[in-house]
Picture 1 (cartoon, rainbow, N blue to C red):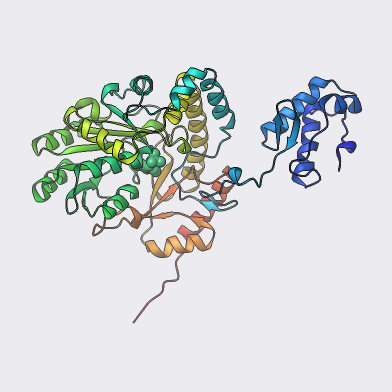
Picture 2 (cartoon, helix red, strand yellow):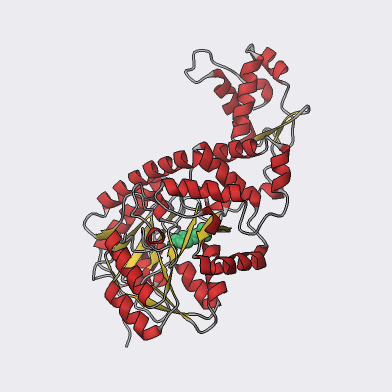
Length: 462
Ligand SMILES: Cc1ncc(COP(=O)(O)O)c(C=O)c1O
């Protein structure tokens, strides 16, 4: 196929610009139009096809939107070179076609336009751009902190802008807290099953993690009290809303009980609310009740886009400047360009619209998983990305995980969430947002259902 053979069908229900765009796209994808080759002028192609110049402009814009061509001002439109090193992104998260339930990531959605528009808006003033290219105060620009605080405030998360600082995502925020306030050999309390990122950090910083027992609402006050007496910790790391991995949501009364115990043993709470932002109605975070006892951590990685790498935290007055100093030591500041883009998406309403799209997608995915796996012990929450599946007794954890993998279904073993030396849950985490398509999700849960119903052929040893 060549440009000369493009044809339009007036009786075809597809708009003419789209017919043209589709044919150009096919030529590029099939190699008939080579990288860096120039498309004909709008006028030439319009005359050839007997359509208006406006139709060709729309067709080229559509092909550009798909990332296949680039319009160069004053020079024309060129086929993109997708092999240019700067544009080669590795699909590091989910391999094509794999039924991968491994990653706690937002569902794959086309967010290109949202980012493009936010970029255009922040570039409308040179003085603004010039400011973004300078060093800024380490905690972040006041204007950016205020925008994030206001957005969170509307969600019921009461943070004071002057006590906030930005981080490169929530993982970095946890690292900053541990780097600042703990030393090798210290003990930090965590939930009995906890976020693997904190286990990895503790290993690197030579910290000992001790798991506090949980029920369906999160850690229990009784177990916390015992752990405080036994280990004299200074910090406890918690994910009280949409706990990773169990999905537990701690009710307000329990939050207050936990805070009372922490107060009496002088323990600071590191409250990681990253997943709480996904809920349409989440309980008030612990920081609202005790801002001087809680270091609150959040990020836009789940509710907006992990690639932004924008997280934030707020800290008690006594601790705040120490954290700012750590941030300065790590990287001076978080790139103001990224916080500006994030703030632009928050103020324009795009972040909220994006969250609604995520909610709708996740609702569909939860319905499929809950329906297909209804006969099994499944914990999940509306809005949350993952489910926690306790295995039927006839299955051994490691066997189940490897048998699932053999059949192309990747799930995360309960072992990954247990601090070293802690007991391992006979359960697996399935991130429903992780499969790229609903079809892969359905196929994956169907495969898991058959596997769960079957009897494993167990290895035995002498
Ligand atoms: C509980 C929890 N905290 C922190 C993170 C890391 O978030 P970020 O990508 O913002 O570093 C995750 C990611 O899955 C998480 O589940």
